[in-house]
Length: 446
Figure 1: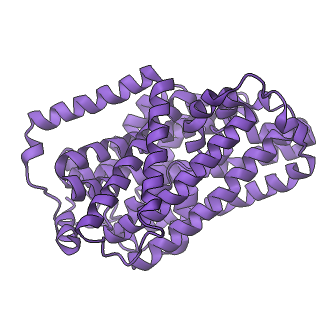
Figure 2: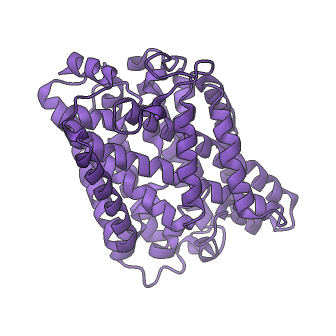
């Protein structure tokens, strides 16, 4: 094992791997978590929230693709914000991204445990969740290509299962089921539901974290991103609408396995198809869990390499070319979160980090464009409207999350304040950037 300045990440990823990563990072959001939005907004309010967030992500992905191709750096949003606003921009973006990617996996691990418990009641939820961290951290240490191939397989299986799910439940959709029980939910419910709508797409930006490992990033990153968002929009809207129309959706609004429960409404709980579906459904959760581990490990690696985190976290294994200490550190933080929170709270914390990072990234794009477009070969369509729309909708989501989750927001911002205090105390806000790759890219585009 050696330091990152002696061993570098390998460039092996192609569009199919990026599509699988973009979809795989997110696809667990189609399996669980979003249904909590029904609990605060009803089906109609949550549909409106989801459409708002879908517009946000379409505008965001097109804008973010320009940043990723122009600045193909493992730090992703951290590198973009540093380029635009210096150390403080990098710190805020890095913190927000870490919160998003480190806190999303515990929710998915808990859902994996819930699915296994649904199939085999004798297996405790936490036992499975803990085991998932050990197993998939180990898989990620074997190499990015091996991890990407594994992710591709489970993502394809997860997408196929969701298509089968839609094929089974869609003939049983009834509009009266979808429209029922919506009394008492007002406009406030729409805003309260926004973080759960974000969960449908949260994580797609993780493709930016493997940009250094992509062959021909100016060609392949746009292909992977745009195919990924198109796939996710279709799956998210289909799953949400048809699940609500097969029966009493209120019974699905507070559980971690809404899709198997929806199937059971159609074919019966005793049917072997219900358990088969739940078993295959694990692939969707695994794809996201595995992809998010890739994402947070590269973010930790990049922050360390640039001097924002301890240097040992940017060590790269000489044999497998993976950031092993970053993988282990992220897993430890995730396990702590797993044993201290519940699914709904972890989703909200993760979504808060995500939308803050979206705001910073869009502001960074607007700022960088005033100095010269990132030279990646991809240009945001309808500029500046797409990044402006993404920025405004992200800001609305952030304010809504804070308004309806005061205590969790307090914890989030106290964490940021603590990190900022350490940042100033250590003098790192005045230190020159250590990451030569960011410096080289900066000189090339500005």
